[in-house]
Length: 446
Ligand code: HEM
Image 1 (cartoon, rainbow, N blue to C red):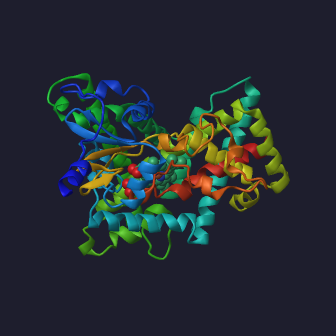
Image 2 (tube, protein in one colour; image 1 turned 180 degrees about the horizontal axis):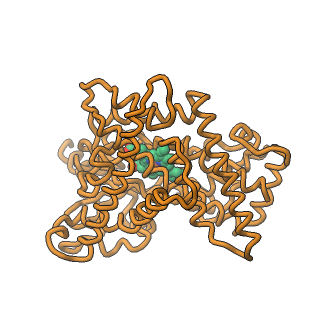
Image 3 (cartoon, rainbow, N blue to C red; image 1 turned 90 degrees about the vertical axis):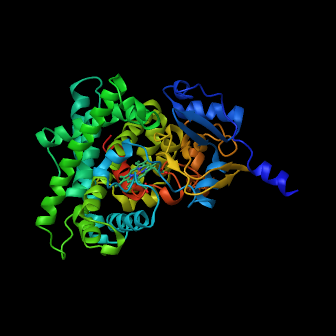
């Protein structure tokens, strides 16, 4: 009968016991994605936890996550109204803004500007690829020099500089020297952003922590200052671009975004502040992610020398030794692609997406989730789902190749690192160029 059906649909979400005041905050540990996957074994792939004053639904596994993000894409396209989200990109961020008509236009315009640098326009695309190739060559030379100087070296600073240089070249048309003061200050801020972002999220779920002196509050204040300083750096650059803007010449991404957002129809609600917010988002999103990916790739190449040898042999065969590799060579380099997909799957270096929120009531796997619920999406669990992946805890790039050595597209599409649906990363194509080209360059030089 209808009553029983409704009762089943509105079944209370399962989940662990939550302590008063803090809820489950103390149980998450250093690797919340692993904690979430373990909780899924007990409570199923859709369950509820409590953090401070927020009920949070956690989604795990290939089926539940794709059902939510693809089949119910609109219902899961929101962002929570966390206090820390309002601090990013001067409060005019594309990434940290809730779902609305204005947000949809904002995202569409940002996406079309990015596309010009990754696929649509061959001139801007080539210029971008050349920037990346130049950076990759310099990175390789620095690494070769450091490796001749001692038995081992820590490439961390070099990888961060390379990723930052590429995103700055993309957005501002400007590459910085390794010792440039302005650039070093920018990198210092980004490092601190990583250190404090965790504290930002505690204040998000326990806003009363802002009201009295405590360690979380001071770290949160710090987070506020870093965002402000970082955004001032971006704003200065965009204002300078606006002053010298020529509609007939797109020097870089800032010009492209000024061209579409500054000039957008007033009805869209978008202003010059959104142009600045968008550029801030692109730099922020493209710094840490890309350098983390480069770190992991190097680590895995060092750990699995047999993989390194196979990669190098394929590049030698396809590219040869007389010229540098480029993106067009990628067609013949299935193993290189397989290595990148396996790095993304195995490490899942962005294990959780940015928190989502529901834009209306919705039902997933028979469980009712009310409007405005905060949702955590566990990408790591998709990439380690035993229903999809054989031996998910083993690093094996060959899992993506069929018996003819070609890439299995069905399997590569199953890797989830850029999320899915309406909030899917809009920088995925740019990110691929930024990771493939340095990898080709490093393997080619060995
Ligand atoms: C959002 C991954 C590089 C721009 C995201 C999200 C993830 C992600 C997981 C959150 C999606 C969600 O909340 O569901 C990555 C990875 C990268 C990368 C793994 C590198 C390997 C980039 C780059 C750019 C970029 C290079 C820009 C040039 C964005 C933007 C958003 C986003 C603007 C916000 C989308 C929205 O809220 O609608 N990315 N990203 N990302 N990413 Fe990336």
